[in-house]
Length: 435
Image 1 (cartoon, helix red, strand yellow):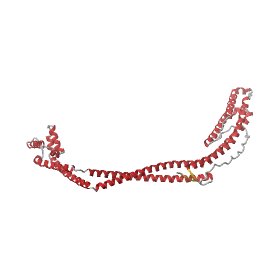
Image 2 (cartoon, rainbow, N blue to C red):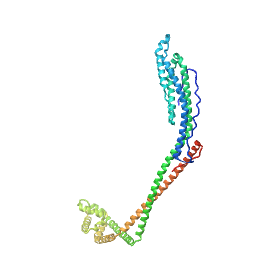
Image 3 (cartoon, rainbow, N blue to C red):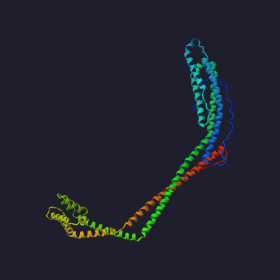
Image 4 (cartoon, rainbow, N blue to C red):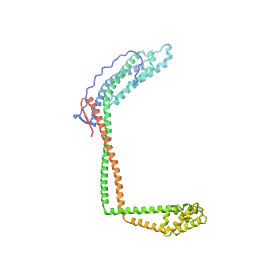
């Protein structure tokens, strides 16, 4: 903080009285040596309250001396205000300046003479006490310093007394600073301990949230485990039933029949693939209906075998054959294409019969009841999903328990250190606990 420089007016005339120690009062300490955090905070508050009372007692004597000095300053200001300054000869031209300086100094001194200095009831009050005192001295120093030449030249009778009082107040301000600095030093362990307790409370709150979350997670895990046991029991009951055994056989038969059907479709696709260039060249200038039939024979030729009447397709194939044979469609390997056309046209009835037979086989198996197999698979999927959720939940629970344990260790360390500070402050060993 800024030091106040007092203008030079004369010699210091007073010394502040020795300030006696405040009555040594000690807060009531708990009878038990095991404290809750709240009890520890109450104890710290009591310790600080005692220090504030002692501070207030010390500052009361400073205030008393300051008030007496300000009364003197007020009297000096009034005497200066009543005094007629005599100016001689050439000094007359300075009359307005002198009168202005006098008026300014008197007004300022009267105003500062009624400074209020409330005694501290808290640490913040002590700071405000010092700041008010410092600001008052700064204002007095500024006004008296800016008018020092006029005061020394034309108001010598009062300047020495004013200087004495200003220096006396400066000493009181220095003493105030020392008292409050000592108070802050003595209070520092209380502040540090209080901050530790606040930190501990925050961590405890976090621990409680984590523990609450862990309890909810434990319940969720129990629910998942019960659900898994139920699903596994259902799965075991289904897998051991005759109905499931028969349905499983049916599923295998369906799979085999569908495999044969797929292989047959692939064979038909390969057979018709040799006619792709012929289909492309024939596709110019045809009807939409014919175009759609060509597309079916190119993309999914087996589909024609499932239609009731394949004549439109066989007729189309014969028309394409005639176009190749008469040269309307020119192909490099026309002979091979004609061979494939002949083979397909000739074997269409047999291929249709085989396709229908395979379809009937697949359909006959699909008509059988295999719902129990789908139920079994559904149960398996649920078991997999619940197992994955259970693994993640157990990992989360373990992490939360580990976090809570780490935080508890941190709180224990904080409370141990806080207890050591309390022991230094009170001379009594305390063990701090939390619920």
